[in-house]
Amino acid sequence: MKKSLVVFFFITLCFSAQAQIGGRATYQFLNLESSARQVALGGKIVTDFKKDPTSGLFNPATINRTMNKNYAINYVNYLADINYGSAAAAFRLGRTEKMVHFGVIYANYGKFDGFDLLGNETGEFSAAETAVSFGYAQQIPKTDFYLGSNLKFISSRLEQYTSLGIAADFGILYYKEDTDLNIGLVIRNVGTQITTFADTREKLPLEINAGISQIPKHVPVRWFVTLQNLQFWNLAFSNTNRNTDNLLRGESEVDDPSFLNNVLRHVNLGAELFPRGGFNLRIGYNFRRSEELSIQDQRSFAGISAGFSIKMRKLTFSYGYARYNLAGSSSVFGLNLNLGEY
Image 1 (cartoon, rainbow, N blue to C red):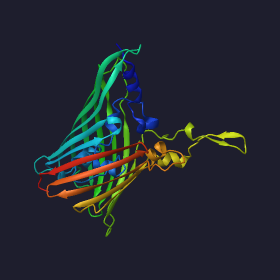
Image 2: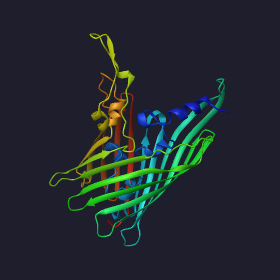
Image 3: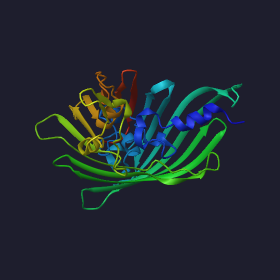
């Protein structure tokens, strides 16, 4: 028997933060930032060429030999009692520049009270999704370019409905060691459903992101600029809640985002203070989140994120905080264990 809350759950699965491009595909959890570092720096970072194997979940080309025998776990306390997180590890193949990567992303949406179409109780039900990934990356010989790919197996369970899927990520990274310049591009979630929820085949949440980051000489700051959702140009939309009445003209002024407003919705900014030290401070700004989740005539600080990391020998603890609006924010906790030679 179909339950009304299940239908509602399908409609709202994209969460409020997914906004205009939400609801166009299934498995939306694949594009959530499940890393304390990612969240603190504004999200969608594709140029994180460090010892954190979690970065391979966002751009497999960032998997490099400094990640050898590195392990990472992250836990996110999300909105409305939703919890999700990730685990990742990377290993070097012998003495080559070839790397393999393993990762898991999961989302637990909790328990819900079920009702039939007549409003009768049918008991509790739960919902959860998981993706297991296997990655490979290597440096193109005699160049500063790195290539990588992930193969992901996806499982989704929403009450009595289940679905299986398969997807792949393809990434490229340019890393200039002497200037510490990183330029990355990734195409994520290219794939299909193997089994559908209710005989209706849905698209996967394809995402194309690009970015650039660098540590300027003699300045202890790494800056990040990320361009997100390049597969879909028009992220801006008219918000009827922002329509205003012009008393002088006697007519309503409809919210109409400008060309620049749409451009900025693709941009995330981030900065990391003391990037090579044992203690880092991080801050980020997500223009799209700020524009879509801010409240008119109120200061909600939507779109701002921050965090830090502390390195203790082989163990690194990270924390990230993201602000959505006056009623919602999330905290991310991460641990990175380095057992490698670097």
